Image 1 (spheres, rainbow, N blue to C red):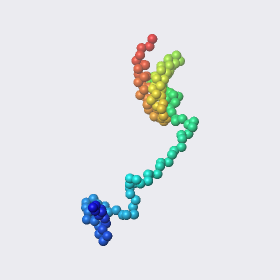
Image 2: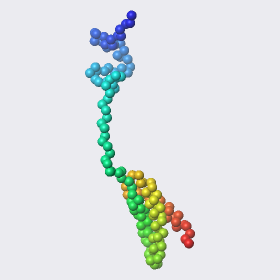
Image 3: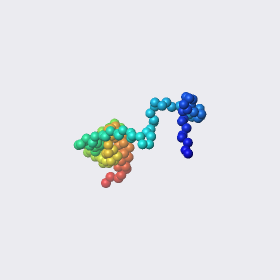
Image 4: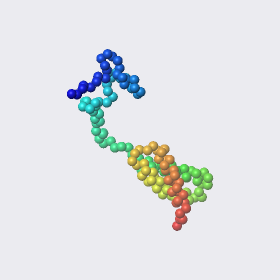
Length: 147
């Protein structure tokens, strides 16, 4: 013969003997459980989000923006050279110097664009990324012998 389980709250209103054990926190009967018990109804479903807007592509960094960021450093190089060395002796020398800036600027722009093309970067951040790339390419092309 099976004995019925003991009532944790005796009828006389006294708390059970284990109620004073360390870590015991008395609970109120009118509070809901913190998680549903097995067999309880499920939590409410999460709301469905609508489809993404049609025709809207995520913003990305364009090559023109990366080229502008690299061109900032080409212009800075031109200003520094003109401020330190003065004006070149002729138009041909100025054209040769400006022409020497084209390849490092394009290479730096291509690398900046390949780094930042997947999302829209702020222009100032593109300028910061383009700085070391432009100056390294400029130093490389200055050391190459001209024919």
